[in-house]
Amino acid sequence: MVLYYADGQVVKAQEVYLEDQAKAKASQYRYADPIEQATQIIQGRRLAADNYDSKEKTGRERVHIVIDKQMYTELYYSESSTLVGQHLPLGREDPSDPIPVAGIDRQTLIKCSSTAYDYFTSNPELSTLHLPVCYPRRHFGGWYNCYRTESGRPDYEEFERRIGSERIEQPGLAYLRDADDQMAYIRETEVIHYLIPWLEEMEKHVKHSKNVSEENKPEEALRSLPKFDIPKILIEKIHLYNVMLQLGISSHFKQPLIDALIFQMYGSNLSQCHLDTLEMTVGRFYSRGIAVLDPVINHLIGTYSLRNPTDRSTDPSEEDRVLRISPEGVDERDEESQVYLKAKPGRAWLEYRSVPPDTRSAFPDDTVIQPPKLEVIGHCIRHWSGVRRSGSTAAAHTGYPLNVGRVFKYYRRRATSSIHVQNRPGRIDRADYSTYRLHNSHHLRPDELEHFCRHRPGSTAAAAPAPIVSQGPSPSPGGSGIASK
Image 1 (tube, rainbow, N blue to C red):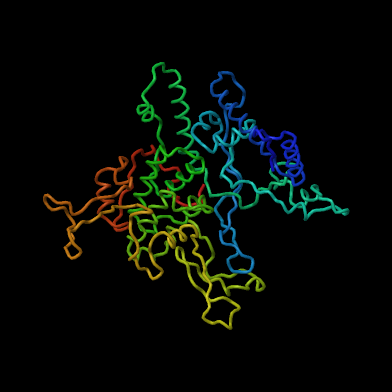
Image 2 (cartoon, helix red, strand yellow; image 1 turned 90 degrees about the vertical axis):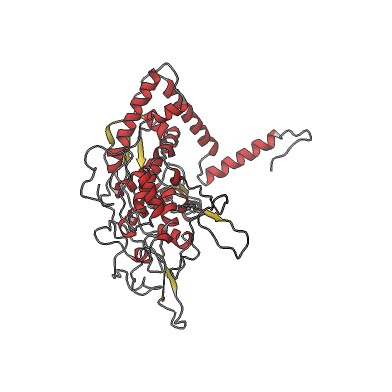
């Protein structure tokens, strides 16, 4: 506790004593000093600002992006049940080459990406941005009691040897980077064909604007910024949106892609929406948060109740399925691990199921809940779509909290009066309270908005809007899989 004099001043000796005690405790348990970390971040930000204004060459003006080796497992894991986290084969797992070969301007990347800003201001001496983004590091406090010498003293060298030096983030500290620290799958195709050209155009634009003497109006300056090319294929839209999320690109540049992605998924059946790709990219990005706050997932869940029962119950076909998340009908566990659930029954894609457990013969009617294969999207549907377990949509609506459609309020003189769906001359029988942004979007054509308002999701195949279409063939023509590189 900090002590104060009667006049309100801090007792300096007591403050120094407490600071020394905190440093000794942090050194004992191998914690990082937060004051040193804050100082490093402040110095890095000042250095980034100085380099942005300076014309001197430092040799670190060009940086690269590297996609590290990626390893993912199922989200639900338990050693005593069938929900053992299985490895998900997502294609090539070796790290990529530096992207691009010539590098990217450091200051342009820092200005356009909040991820790059945080990374390079904390590590100004580095020149490589690693993707996918990872969860914050974790302090392993158990080393102090688990690894000791024969005399009983904590042995950090033994901890480092047993854990592995490659798992320790900073030598001398007890911070680990676990195998499941990666947030969401990312592939290099969209980085090479969409992100890098946009960054190069942005670099040219910044250099040109520095040479312009007269100041532009803010609105004109914003409109003059380079825009992202929007892919034609749905799966490429999903991957590009995931790249933008992981790099922290401004919503001004993401909005046209979000509108195009929402509209194309709205006009497609669920079996053709590549939900497994959406799960492993955008869904996994929010797996430890509230995924329904994402605009794409929010619209998918909010309009889920408007889809017909056949669409909601149809599994993805083999042609549209880009990732088989768990093996069907095969139980590869040993008999000792089959403790909770008998053979692994086929998990539904989006629905929770109740299945009988292994060892509860005294309670034959007892069941346990089995999660869906698409854990994040299935969880959002269960808790946010308004669709009941029986399939009833009586409680579903498109208003708040998801707010994905028209919201009308009807007025009548008394409870027994009839409701008029259109305003009569000189009267207000209906008012539109909709605040959903897409209804007023300038990224969609009038015919597309008409289709959006008059058709149910998945009822007719709607062409995807492309406000800015990339030139030439798609980066991965003929192949639309999460495993394709």
